[in-house]
Structure formats: C-alpha cells, structure tokens
Length: 114
Length: 114
Image (cartoon, rainbow over all chains, first blue to last red; front, side):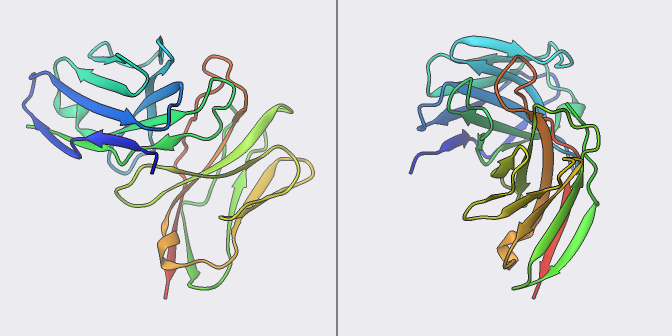
C-alpha cells in the first residue's frame, strides 16, 4: 500500500546533540510537511516543501531545518535539541499544491531529549 | 484562518451515531470546513470537507448550517475504533502560501464506549 513512513518511531537524543528524523513516501506526492506535536497539544506546522521549494513557518525556530533530496524523502534536522523540543514529529504529504485539502500523515517519530 | 470552537470531549455508545459539533462563526465565504481525526499514537487522518453543501463519504457525513457558522460531523454507527480526537479546521482550499496550511485547534476527544 502507498503510504507515509517515518523512521525511527522512537528516537532518544541528548541535550544539544544534533538529530535527524526521516520521512519517506510512496504516494509520489509533490508536497511534504513537518509538524510538531507536544504532549496533549494539537499538531503545529513547522515547514513544508512544495517540490523543491522550501516554505518555513514564521515562528519555526532556526534550530529546526529540513532537507528534501528527492520526491520520496524528507528529513527534519534539529541542530541543538533542547528539552522543550521533546515531542511527536509528524510528516505528512499532499498530492499537489492545488490539492492540499487532504493530507496523509505518517505515524510520527516520538523524540525524547535527555 | 477562521477560528473554530469544539467541545473538549464527548462520549458515545457503540453502534449509535456520534454527532460532533463545531462553531466557526467568523468563517469567510471562500473558506472550507475540514475534519481530521487522530487516533492515539497515530498521525491525523483526513475524514471529510465541505464548503456549504452537506457532504457524505464512506467514513462520515458533514452537515453545514445555511449561514455556515457551524457544522456537525456525523459518524453514523460509531465503533470502539472511532475513539479519537476530532479536529474541525477552517481554511481556504486552494494553496495560496500559508492559507493552504492546516491549523489544528484543540479538537474534541470522542470516547466510544461499549
């Protein structure tokens, strides 16, 4: 089945140690998103790619970066994780820039910062 | 995007219809109503969306009032697997910069009980 895959499902990193989260999709969708969801809160968009065009949300900290080397893969890099960055990180896709109403989400990666 | 108001929690008996309300009194004429849900430890899942006409698909029905200031998501025969947080989101459908992004509110936690 076509899907959005996130690896790993659980990630533990140390305070200040860079960490990369991965997302891949077999849907061949043009748009990929990264959301942050803290405990008992709603998902919050960090940034998204339309094809190779990167779109950052205004309030996304500089500590968060993203890469999309090809259509299928997208990475979230946290350069210096703080304790406040512990959260579930969700990757999502949508077919096209003009069809963004339906987003397909992966299962998420739960990040713990020690 | 217009803001939405949802009850924080609701209970429903298994096999009965679940009716989840959403208020969006400041909705603009070109804004759609979307519903997503998030089952525990999973990513959000698209359910349905509409502009002003009632909509139905294999998952649910969406009833939008004539003045568009509120809507109701109906799960006709709720099962235990429908236990989730349900998010009502209002936004412009077509991508137009940040207008295309999903902004999740707090949602309604629906508990389906045997």
